[in-house]
Image (cartoon, rainbow, N blue to C red; front, side):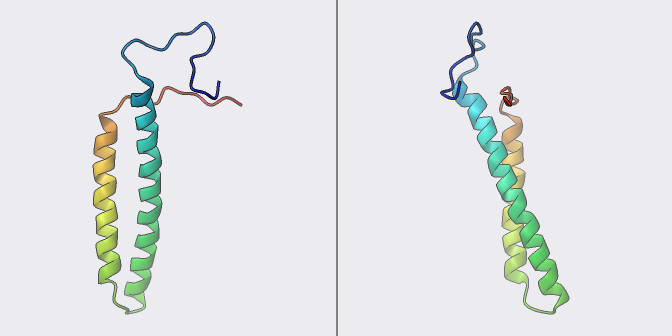
Length: 88
């Protein structure tokens, strides 16, 4: 079942291509990646501010990551929900 084939006896839903469902999962991975770096940049920016060091570059980087994260979340809402389940 690791090759992406449908389980025996079950056919894929009509109109739902494997690529659309997969792209939603890929968006989730990118959102998680951006979220991680947003937290890292937030901590660095706060630390730089508290230690009276220049933090403008860090803050601008944080802004860019947050804008990208916002855009990815808006795009993700247009894709179908994840339908795959994990097998133990």
